[in-house]
Image (tube, rainbow, N blue to C red):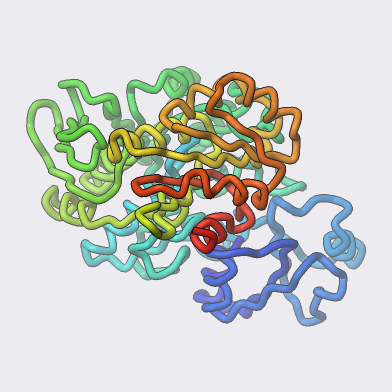
Length: 436
């Protein structure tokens, strides 16, 4: 919704909005763009001169502002519908979908295209360090969008990406997530299948051939052009071969022919896979291999994706958005390979709807194996107490203040503290640095 607000301003609309809890980095981004954000959903926030209300999927029936909009029969649309009708018309939409890596891969693609001199548009649900904004209108036909499978609005239960009509689509991976709206993985596959069913024949689908869930999805029907790649890295087709354990240096091949070399500051198998997908899509759009390699090698990453918040007394504090066992495992594996036997302290907030539902409780312990100590946070204390029993290195915390009491035990050089949450986590990263 923050991205939509920015695009609407650039399109010439006068924009204001409201939310229950706006926090950085998006609250800062909106303030910089001069977009006023009112606190809460009070009826008083309805301005008389409003022509259109764009409704985010956090809003449901019973919301006082929404009820007043319905009562007064004011004009409203969903965010994705507004985007399609007002922004994406006549654009070549490059949609990045999948359970993991949407923000990072969208950011990589946008940077590569911009570095090639193209004034593209983009909308990304996160802040890329290399980009000037999280959303930009642009004048070129290309528009890069992070294509989310979450539902559109309380009055439109289709996935958001159904609205985007992409000409280029990446399905980067596929696992179960969003337990609050999907019953199982098959329900998610159905939404992806609906997306594939409406792609025109001249659209192009990119996907990793080694993802079994995507393979089963495609068996339901594909009606457009296809190009696959091997994220595992074998000898046929597009693949990448790493040069060091932490995956910060790797070569990209098509069959046995090297196409590019990436050397960057990012780490982890997941980032290598995202870069491979980016490289292939950029090449398909006509960019030169050397140009893509140089742009990716300079990519600095995105906020809240293994972001170094600060360092004090040789103790490093990171923020990461990971809230799914697969993403957590990739993140910690990359950090472990980078720091060797130095101590890793992991703080995990079980905040997302899927995490708090208990769906991932069996997978969580295995995803945390690379950490030396783990502190679990959740409103559901019974849930994290059960998980904590599965390993001696697990502890539970009732809140962020409680962890700060443990901090002196870890106040030793060459320690890495990583905070995992898809929320603000009470800004514990900064509190840790202050206490250190």
